[in-house]
Image (cartoon, rainbow, N blue to C red; front, side, top):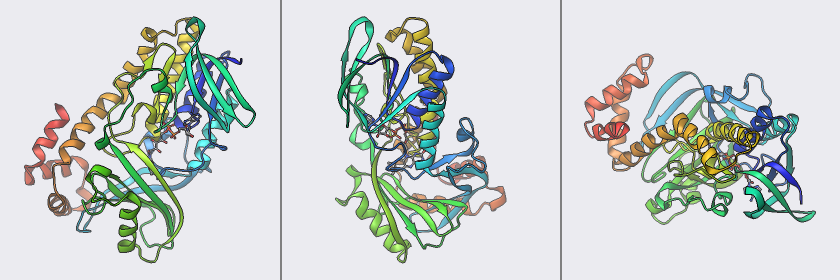
Length: 391
Ligand SMILES: Cc1cc2nc3c(=O)[nH]c(=O)nc-3n(C[C@H](O)[C@H](O)[C@H](O)COP(=O)(O)OP(=O)(O)OC[C@H]3O[C@@H](n4cnc5c(N)ncnc54)[C@H](O)[C@@H]3O)c2cc1C
């Protein structure tokens, strides 16, 4: 039975960054990452967009081979197709996740963590002396790892938290179903991301165009199934594409779930931490989770390493992770979630009117603060939404 200090389930951004930071914090520890897919970073189930500042906390994107495109504009599209440009600066990047996740895994490997691909955690039970016995399957057969700390970084379909008895269920209204194509041969501003709202387009979510190059983009949408008219995400996407880009050639297709909820109430128990999508650490307004997963991974890796060094991996000690996360982003997510719920009550006509209001502000003066103030003055329906931010 392999005996390790930290066993991480999942080699996405949360798991790879957790491994790297655990090794940085305590190089003497044995850190093993399990990844059930046969290669880290594939298949890609993501639109691959990240903000500039968050990404730079972990890696320098300038000239990096894992970057597809730099983004300097955000264009919102109202339900009636009117466009609103809201940013003209370096706002973010579109990654090549296949390469980016592999880069993160290589970084963890370079620091001494073992990343085992094609290797799946199949269950876990408490072992002796506060350790966990994790059943692991691979082409080589089945084995059991004994670990002092298990980090569940196993994404949206996470099981580690459940195996450890944590409450990780997602209310149906907070689970978005997404569909996405890589589309070639379409005309759009390659330096901008586009986001379109509308009940008939993506009920409860939005549609996006995230450029990967000139004429090629990730084009997708996320919706809440409870609000749909019976069609699934792909059917909504096909309808949107047919209307917006009838000549686009679809080169690749993916589906996936995004949890637009708040952080699970408890992200730790004796010898276990959960991080990233597995702990619902996605921004519930935007659905973005890559940078959040890395931030949570960094906290989880450091907390686990310090706990092992101190010889105390109890829930009491590991609770520090939860508090640090809530302080860092978890409490903000609670506010964003309340805004998301309040926005759900507003209809398409409201968003069309809001677009007209914002477009009346000269583009060079269109800062988020000004947009917000104008919007509140012209659309009193927004006051309860804004109030929810503080409540
Ligand atoms: C369609 C779509 C578009 C998105 N677009 C964006 C975007 O533009 N920007 C953004 O920031 N976020 C986006 N997201 C969300 C983003 O992809 C996730 O928040 C992010 O990948 C979370 O990282 P993670 O490490 O927590 O989980 P993941 O990246 O999901 O990694 C989890 C890993 O665990 C592995 N695993 C699971 N179970 C086991 C097991 N039992 N044993 C071993 N391995 C296991 C999986 O194979 C996977 O590799 C999108 C999501 C979807 C579905």
